[in-house]
Amino acid sequence: MKIQTFLLPVNQFVLTILLAPTFWGVLGTGGITAGQLIYTLLVLAIGCALTFFHRRPLIVPKTILLLFAVLLGWYGLSLAQNTCFVPSTIHIGDFSELSRPIIYLLSFSIAYSLFSAESDLKYVPHFMIGLIIGLSVLDVLKFTPLGVQILKLYTHLTPGSFNYLRFSGTFAYCYNYAFALIWGMLLVLFFDYKVKILVPLFASIILLTGSRSAMLAMAVALLLYYFRRNSMSKALGRIAVTLLAVAVAVYLIRLMEIPIVEQIFANFEKLIAGITGTAEDGSLTTRNSQLEHTLKNFEHNPLLGVGPQKGDSRPIEIQMGYYLSSWGIGGVMIYLGLMLYFLYVSAKTARLAGSGAVRNFSMANNIWIISSFIIGMSTPITDQVRASQLFYLVQGLQYSLYLVEKQNNAKKILS
Image (cartoon, rainbow, N blue to C red; front, side):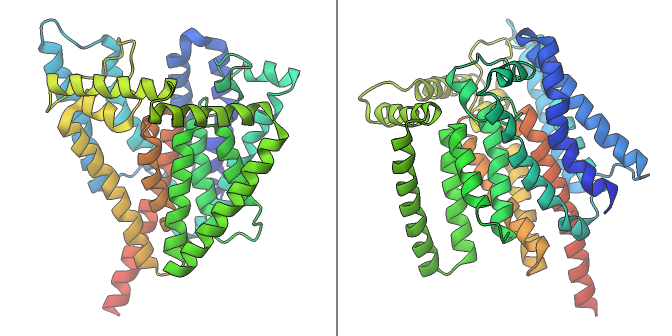
């Protein structure tokens, strides 16, 4: 087994356990931003050290470099213009956003440079699946007295609160972990792992995150999987069986009256009440307020946006809302262009591969990218510190597979 094949997944997941908890705890709740920065720099530094160790230069494909360069340029243009306004809407911390495209590009490049295409797919899915599930161990431990003390090392959440009880692995927030769980579940489905219990296990942990947008994303991911792997009649049949199994499972779980489960169901009931107007749902109210704030910022500067506004006490957590408010129409179009290109690369790779591990990986990634837009309704998931490295690492591996399949296809045509 190649050492980089083993170390890259460990770089993302195990370092999340070893590094992020330490610095989050040392810096305290007042130093969350600094803790995230240190965590990011350490993860990327180790990734770069791996490329140096294997004497592989960091490589960035021209198309990807161009897309990220345009995104970075637009960030800079927006900040420059908004700084010139009197009074300026730009906070000094807003300029830290210029590092985001660079960090994402570096995460992409590390995976693209280190992974050696199809040979790595013999090991990578296994490690990712195991490590993603393994992170739930700490979520089980946190219900014990000793676990409460351990959790203080890497989360600022109040013990016993709803957000604390929800499963989050070591991703700090439940929706970040749920995004990783959806990726793991898709790998299990597409690689046809014999251990069928893994699918309901992933689904159960996603439910225990309590993230409603993640549950919707999981449902959509399962629907897309069924339709892509089966005929229409088989897909509808399997969906019906799945819905029946979920209904029975939900009924049985409610009978147990587990506190965290009861709180999650209560959260769902609040959402339904909020939608129907019979009661108020805090999360829905917050998102509606953020949407109004987004539209107000958009009206102020439709093309370039108003900047990240880190000094504002009302951060916009909606993925597209963040881009529309901060970077305007231009920023939205560039971001969508990047995501659509990733969708194209994954779909094209699956078609070129025809069958096998490369096709399975690419189809799983294609659906995972789609799921990011759904979770993005409640959080900027591809911009979250502990989710973005994983997302762009996967896209880097995907691009490596894409170029290999493209070259193989060209050779077949010539021969």
